Image (cartoon, rainbow, N blue to C red; front, side, top):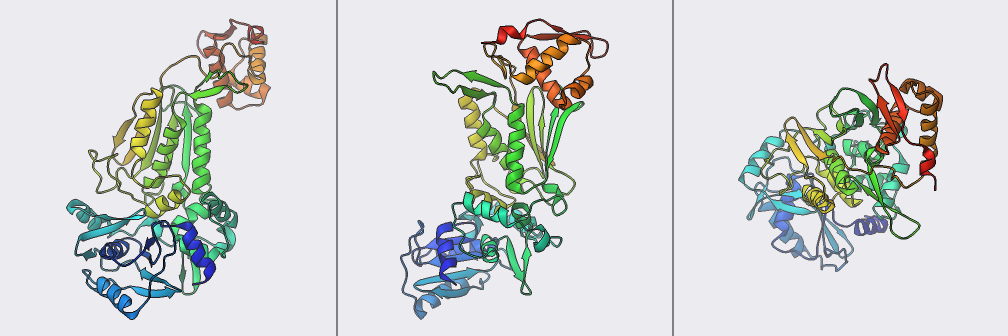
Length: 454
């Protein structure tokens, strides 16, 4: 190991694949079996939990002690011992004879911890281990020359607060998203999701689809977007899409800046979107993570339902992750806490904002519903001037009260969804009303924008 790589490990800290231990104690057997039952990992003996290098005296006696601990697991865990200066590294490969047990029971790596499995969890573990984890599979379509984005990796490391002083290949391997196969670097599906410019041809099912419906039913869609970039960009774009559709009221603060209060707490929506991305079943192709916005609710759904080992009664109280590596990578950049606190956080944020508690549906899909209350004033306060787009729209309605939405799109060079939103805004401001049906009716301007001028 080079000095730069060791410093990178220290800077990066403990993770799904890395454990620090100041010395050898009884808990080492738990860590060894936990890694063997998960995706493998490395235990650095001589480093504190805080990443402080304490060092140990590396002797043959110490090596034999660690080897005995691994051999005493059931079945024995094959390990490799590597010394770097006064640090001893225990390399634990993913086991081929799972599950592994130590004297204290069965453990599996969850986030940055070794978690003891209960009886039902062991049964589910045995069932699930017959199925290779999607995120760990090599993506055979991925071409490093064509599909890999160094800029995405650089951006990720910056978000994680990690200085990049190693070559990309070493970093990708340390992150657990790539591995050498016959001396050739191969990207895993988790790496495809984070470090490619587009997932459309490589992992299409990871797309996030957002849609806005007119009314409360899935009938007339006003706007739709499919986000097919890397997983972080997709999350950010989806949240931006939702934020644009939320109703907003304003609170004067006594300063030049007013306070925007969204009808639903943005952090709760963000938590729900990230939760859907982390926990969806990526083996299910042809199904996207979906965000649907109706007049009375917002629904966020992901394919796969609840992970095995998690009941509806335990939902929100216990952490069971379908995609540990994806969760770990998002945890490094503070997207998730990796402690199973997401649902509790959503409920708390909604309670603090005075919003209705969410509704949940479980089945082939897992769905969370945020209830939108009909409150006024919305979007534009009555005592503030109209912006130019709304003024222009109001003027068009005054000139031609029978103008259609399609004609407004053509005249103003904007989308149908934008026209619909702006008309809705003017109605909420009591500046217009619709007389008669959509076909054959007309618009009536019932107030003048001059009343909105300062």
